[in-house]
Image (cartoon, rainbow, N blue to C red; front, side):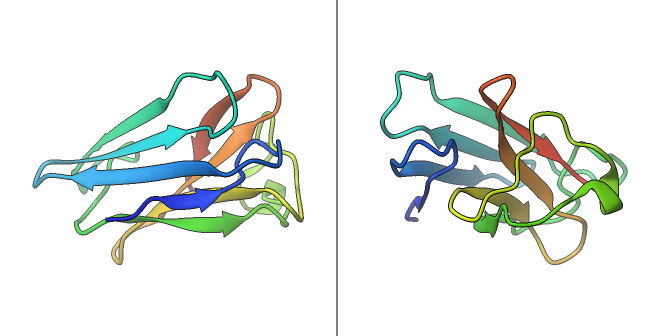
Length: 115
């Protein structure tokens, strides 16, 4: 499968998001295109009973706008900055809430939140 190409960290360069899955887990990898930042990886088990797990397969990543204010839905998200030009991405499936990934402007790493 192809990578998603979006500017995650607002540096004007394309960044790349990949995903892979087995019957028991989903992994997401992020490579920042123009930086010397190390790739970041996230691993989620498949488990309907955990908020830190994907509840069902298949799951996939998709680009997501940063032009919104999530505070009404989930409260303040540390390091989240609204943007009309940069992007976030989500790990989604058809059965449960998505994982929303964004560039944390304070820590300079990818973070995620979920309803």
